Image 1 (cartoon, rainbow, N blue to C red):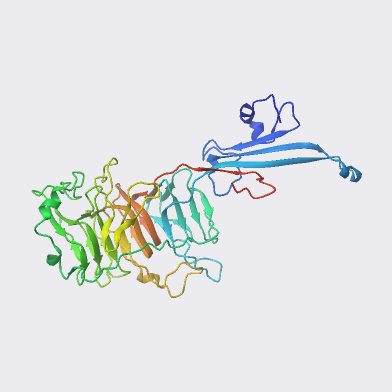
Image 2: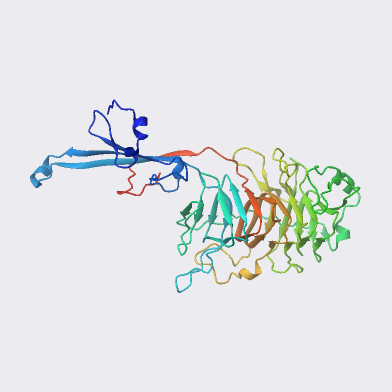
Length: 454
C-alpha cells in the first residue's frame, strides 16, 4: 500500500481520531487513537493490561470492498477493517500486595473489600511499581490518596466493589499468591536473652555509635545520634529475645541494633529511637516476629508509641540522603536474609518478617479457620518516622502504619494480609529497579469485534 499523504500529519487531525482519515490515492480510511496524557484522552485506545497513555491503536478500513458471490444476494460491497494496538507494557511488579482473599456475604457484599485501607488524609505514593489487592482498595477521610506512577496500575480481584477513578484499576482474574519467602528459624545454640541488660553490647557500643551517619537524628531534639555528648546509645546483639518486650520510651536514648537476625518473641515497643542496618553496603538487620494481637505477651507485637518514635532499618546512609545506599541483607543462619536483585544490582534486605498463620491461606473464599483478630503484629500506629528498606514480609498480618503528620516516611515493598495507612505520607520504594517496558502488538485487535489484549 502506498500513499502520498504523511500518516503522522494525518493522525494529527481530529477526524483521524473519530470518523477516520482517507489515505490519498488509496481506498483505505485510517483511524488513530492515542492519549497525550492520562488527563487528555478523549478517545482512548482499547487495551487491556497496558497504560492507555503509552499505547496507540490503528484501524484500517476499506469501506467499499467489492464482493463477487454475494452479489446474487444483492450485496455488492462490504466495509472491511482490521485494528491493531501497540503499547508499552511493564511486567507486573508490586510495591504493595495485600493477600487476604474475598469473604462474600449472602447479600452479595464482601466482608473483606477494604483489604488496602487508606484513611485520615494519608497519601501513599508508590514509585515505579504496581499495587495488587486480592479484594479491593478503600478510602476514608478527606484527601486520602493512593498515587501510582504512570505506566503502573492498581490490580484488584474483588468484583463486589469494582474500583474506578484514580489510580487506574485493572481487574485481576485470579488471586495473587503468597511468594512464600523463607523466614529464618533460630538454630540450636542461638544466644537467648531474658532481659535488656543481658542483650546489650557494652564493649563495642561506642564504635557502633560512631559509624551512624550524620543524617540520623532523634525526633525530640534533632540531635545527631552519633554524638555521645547528647545521645545515649544502647547497643543490642542479635539473637532470641524471650520473656521481655524490648522497649525504648526515653528521649535522647537511641537503641542500636548490631548486624544480624533478631527474634523478638515477646515483641518490641518504640517510643524514641531504634535503628539498625545504618552502615551502607554492609550486612544489616532482620527482625522476626510471630503473629500476635498483644503488645506485651509471647508472642508480642511490634508497636510505636508517640510522635518521637523513630524506626529506621537497613537504610544505610540513604536515610534522608537520596544519593546513599541501603545496607545489605542480614547474615542469617542459612545465608543472607534477603533476595537477589534480578536486574543485577545489590541484594535486597528483608527488614521486618512475620511468620504466617497456617490457618490463613490464599484461597477463595477466605478460610473460616483464619482468625484475623489474632494477626495484628505490625502495629506501628503511634506516629513518628518509619523508614524500612527492602522487603517487609508479613503474609498473614493485618499491618498498620501511621507516621507523623507533615512528615514523609519511606517503606520498601510491603506484602501483608491486609494493610492500613493512617494520617500521614508514605513513599513506597519498591525494591525492584525500573526496567524498560516491553512493546506488545496485537495484529487482530478491534474494539468492536474482539477484546483488545496487547
